[in-house]
Image 1 (cartoon, rainbow, N blue to C red):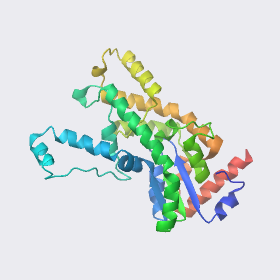
Image 2 (cartoon, rainbow, N blue to C red):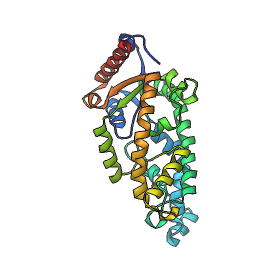
Image 3 (cartoon, rainbow, N blue to C red):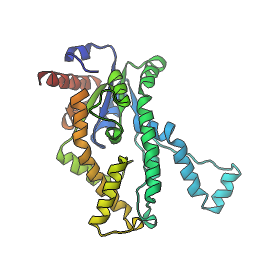
Image 4 (cartoon, rainbow, N blue to C red):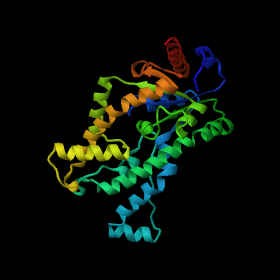
Length: 289
């Protein structure tokens, strides 16, 4: 959904935008802010963790609880229930389920199991993105929202072809929303890596990239057996490699089908009107190119 001029965007009676970029760059902060100014907030990660992967997550909790005889007996007699309290701001249930491959004694998953869960996430992410048009209409008809923001995960770029207008997800997003790339700096990337080491987030790798980096990590660290890999070590190393691999693809998606705003400029936004002005300025800059 590209605009001929910024005024056409500002005059529109309804606005629907999809924000994308690396994890932690400000997408969810912006969405939470706009929610206070009568924007409907559609969190793709929340949709993944509830509608499309909720059963997987809860079944995993139950499987762990079943290892404790006391809890197993209570579960089998329906005396207790176990649920996932995932929220827009707390994706820990999804992160825990996806896990990290490596040594089971250090909390890791066998690589094959990790790959199985990765495939579940890929399917769930695509489904959650394709759900978007229905939620735009639902937000308007049921709840009276004219303005809509889709808050995507960093792995959006892993499930699309950023150069293909006919990609099912790309066409769904561009036909229904304005694509906004929130671009960070190298300093932002370094800070994200530091924060990831402290608090890992859900990660999705394309299958070929995962195998390549898995083998590369083992070679660099002189490891021969999968079960000897340190999950935390690979998780942080893999995140850094994945982050740098994604950056040019984010930019390609914006160049082909959307607009770019700087994370530093976004951090100054205080309300919905200021956000609309920021997008209008991004449209103006693209038109001048």
